[in-house]
Image (cartoon, rainbow, N blue to C red; front, side, top):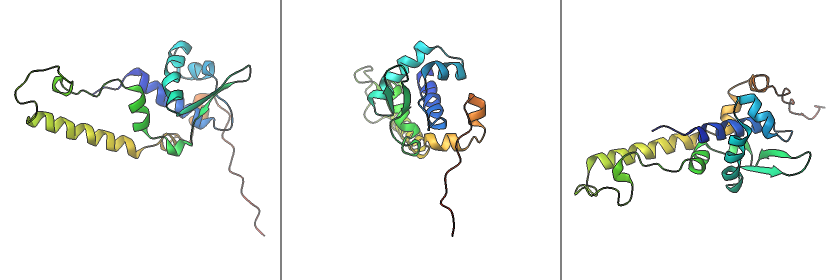
Length: 155
């Protein structure tokens, strides 16, 4: 199975927004950081927005931000929104094949088990996991360094 460019850049867009969490992110800036067309990112933005993974703010000072905390967005959430098909073989598609073994085939069963394992692993990782595992992500994306968390003074 190979994920599409749409999924790849959707994850990257979410990572950018997570790294830039104190500010609205703008599509031209994200496009420049990753060397991809703005039009392509706008296309990806629509399903992410519809699924609540991002919020868009219109207007002159508008932009994009995460629709919920980065630790609440799993890779499976993104893949489910951006991938059109998870048919690993012809027999996964409804009515596409007329094989007499389709309901009792060992291959079909093995592929379904593998696909479910793939989804389980994606569900274990969040956008936050991807961002916090790269301490230099802000530098690499040309973003200001993330603010240090404010702690209450000790008395």
